[in-house]
Figure 1 (cartoon, rainbow, N blue to C red):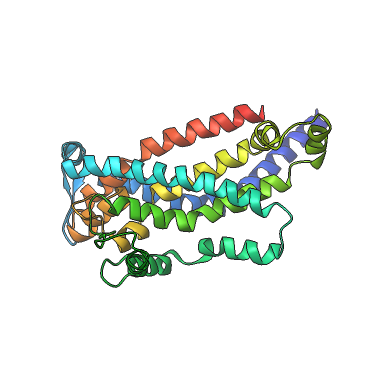
Figure 2: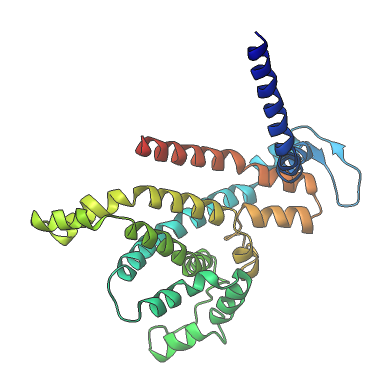
Length: 298
């Protein structure tokens, strides 16, 4: 009995020690993650102006947003921006990975040049693209004019019909290399024996791609798409710098609308509600994709 008591006491001491060691990390997690989230949730039930005292309004902020046409348009814009960008970045990244995985001359230099856009700070990239897309002095319209492709100057960032396409283009330019990097890493992890066996069986390049490459890259593609979707969904600087949410709210997404509401309109409660409204959709998407990946692993 004494031996069992000793083991029990030792196990309890180890458990206490483990909790003590984890305590600093737990405090940081609560302070950085849990507390701001809970405070934001509580803020959505108040009408609070910057510098003013909060006033409890219940669900009024949620009701106001649901009936607000700008918010309804922003809801659609956010998904168009995120899904549209990923729909272009994924095949481009897959093409990058396939090309860079082959034996090409100056492989390291080529990889560095291809991945360079992803290394450029987003703020710098946005201002460069904003100059390039300028309808009067931008280099894009200048080149298109010289090549006689266009007759009139498109207002890339000022036309409601072109603005969303333009910001998606900039996001694709910077985000596609991320897919290229991850897919290239996935390609290099595929065993060459699989391709050698397929060659012996007389499989074509297309059949090897469909039956070996794509299945082997499935988890890499899912994880990359999930991360890219979250980053794009919550993107702020691209829209804020390039269009500011305009023209006519045609490029507003949740993050920029929350900024406009909280900082410019000084309505902190409504701004927090705008941000919180995206949480259920992100949670569902993350859950579905994570469950899909777990099923594939099993």
